[in-house]
Length: 119
Image 1 (cartoon, rainbow, N blue to C red):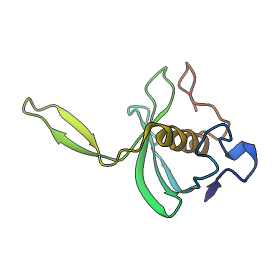
Image 2: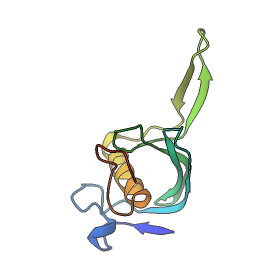
Image 3: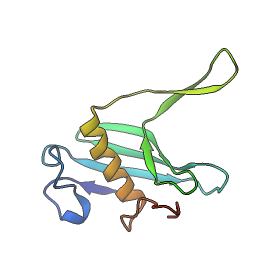
């Protein structure tokens, strides 16, 4: 489990973020998806202070940077197309911090995928 907060070394904290001293993020589990056919690369469970969140997705499309998407409900629209609706929404500044910390845990070399989209 990784513990991320504003009081530990800079390699694990986003000290430039205004919420970094008030927020503690602990990584509970990272389930890597090992398939080249899917843009879904991992499911991450984490603790935000005293609350736990499950199945946040690490998405990385070919030649794109990896990004984080909250857990979502899948549904089909009237035309038969798959749609996704997030089950939770954080304020942008908090979601930016969560995304940064989850990507740091997923990509240990602090590489967000760059142009090549490789881990």
